[in-house]
Image (spheres, helix red, strand yellow):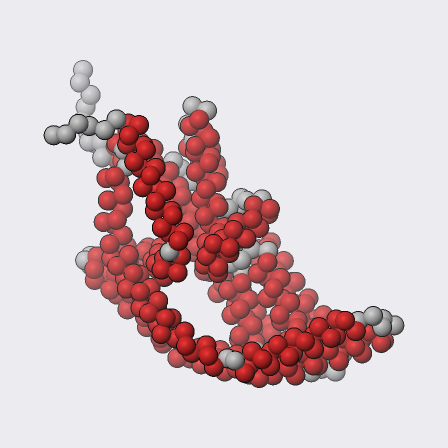
Length: 378
């Protein structure tokens, strides 16, 4: 048996491996992206796999296969209905975008004349320029097909990685527990359990929020006779995962579409846009005061400035994927910093973590495996 490493040597080796892994992830962003998407989806579906495994006494592989096949059926079955409709609306929006922008330009010009503002020429010219850009984009849309092969390859990698993560999650967890230092295992595993609680609440709450906001927005836009209601509703739901910026962007796009569409019920164009804006405002406040507190609650507890910084950093590193995972990653780092700060002060970190998440401190593995019923020696 060779010489044992000192604790300092072990820490240095672990730190070097961690830095190397972070560098590889940073440099190989395009390659890592489908695996990260697979990890997010597998994390959402893991409770369903565990439920099938426990209730039906199925082998892990069979339970994972059932959930995976159900996922494929939902993707391709629902896609056959929703995707063509969304594509048709997207093509129609692309075709009519110059007309919508021209109508918006005329409406702004008429409104400016009515209220005595003659200094909107620059704004109107800019909107006309957007119409020229939209025509250019419409003519160059076909080359997008060139990226189809890469998309299909990433989709295949994503699906394969999702299945293996669903199947092998317990093995990966056991492996992770084995590599933890024995002296720190009883504290680190409960810490990871707290992080898992946070991420589980956030991810599942956001999935529910997307569904609720998409459905309610579709109903509202359909009642108001706003064109491309399905496309705008899906976009609104997806943008909900981007705090602050997402809902404002979705509402602005819907108002722009309404501005270029003939107003129903004899309303003026400006009043029609105002009604759409009021609808989005009501939905937003209903979400803030009712949906989010009931579904997600006070999960992340991050200052708005920290949220914005996290979004910008995530977007700069990994684009849309970085924006989507920025807030939960920042919330996780917050829990880790609470733990580290308490340890530096020689305090027990778990009471504060319990207060943050409103959950009991998970029992460490040693306590969970302690023999029951054995009397202490007298």
